[in-house]
Length: 540
Figure 1 (tube, helix red, strand yellow):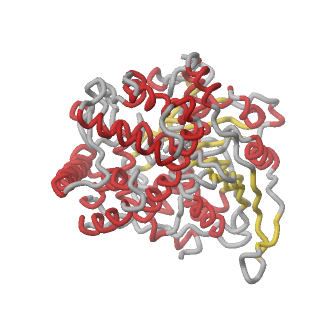
Figure 2 (figure 1 turned 180 degrees about the horizontal axis):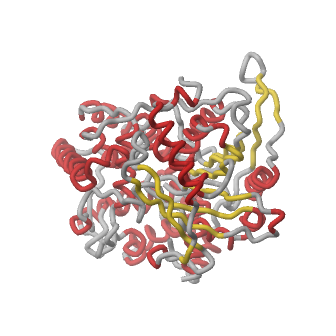
Figure 3 (figure 1 turned 90 degrees about the horizontal axis):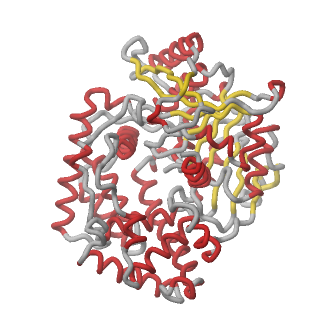
């Protein structure tokens, strides 16, 4: 999922402005390594023809767009090429202070960052945007970049849907059938090229984008899944890295890509769900949902039961309620609006909940593209259990202690059990001392989407990297967000290459020097002030 710290702020702005291998030669098959080099040289020669952005991008005239063509299959660079949509806002400062292009990937898989140049209008990005061209792009399969499709938008569910935390055998069989149909749809609608939508190719695409931008080395900001692409790039092309920020890192351990990571994510969401309920209970005078986290859970269960019996607005059932509340696990800025909607619903007013949770009645032509790309990349990237008995065993056990997100996450990924396209072997993301320029890693300690253990693991794997932690916080993606301390480290690194000073790590027998720093958490949301602001600003 995209970084909420940046994505949320840009959404408001948009509305207001209407896997151990050690060397690159061993990390990639020779044919694909040669293909990447050829594609990069070709892109450098072609460059990017910047022009006004297509209306579909919904970007202002200050942002320019272009296209970079990359091989669908890097083992066949002279074969079919696919277009990647790129967007750019030139650096606003003096030409003498320009440091090149800062390329952003927001994660997903399946998310586009063509909106990223709008960050130039945010106070938190003012100094960075003065020195860097802010560049976004739609990765392969996303949006207008050779889109992946797995189902007819007209056939997508518009609600209401169930969301059982203890699914019956009948319901499990229904979801197995749906997963099989979805996997078959991906193969049928996308065709033979489906096998080429994976993370290794996303990393190779970064190398081609770098060349097309005319940059001798890459300056990159990756959030969430974008950190995995960054880690792959750093392993494959360490000599091409200038500066790299990896925000809200996924655990790149090969054995955890992606089945194990999704189990860990489901467990972490239980803790973040508790954080949200604890906050709501603290403000019981405002919401009336209960003075303890357990009482708030009871109120939520009452709403689930009522919506199962009678969907709100005919479109919001337990599944839609869960989807709305899941957003609160990603970003605490959703807490006031979600708590207010739940409170209003239980008091007889379903409209706020319908406004926040109902799926669109008329799906857009590209509806489902994000999920299709997510599925293609995750299923192509690595082996998955192919027997539902394994999924059933693991998720049933996990749901006993983490019911909130476990089964919903399992259903989202279950098509990978029935995937027919060839799968990749995950690369071992790892660099030795002195191979890679220092990388800055940012992480929130209670991040649920990418649990903090992943940040520690990536920090260990990328020799010489630095880790900045926002303690006690859980927003998924913290670069450019409300924490001035985090933003200070981000600016110091991007503008001057500065990192936290090394210190001795007393958790290791040899007292290894490490670069780590901590920031206090940003303030929790204030329900009163934010509720007042909601009257002026549309809910996201």
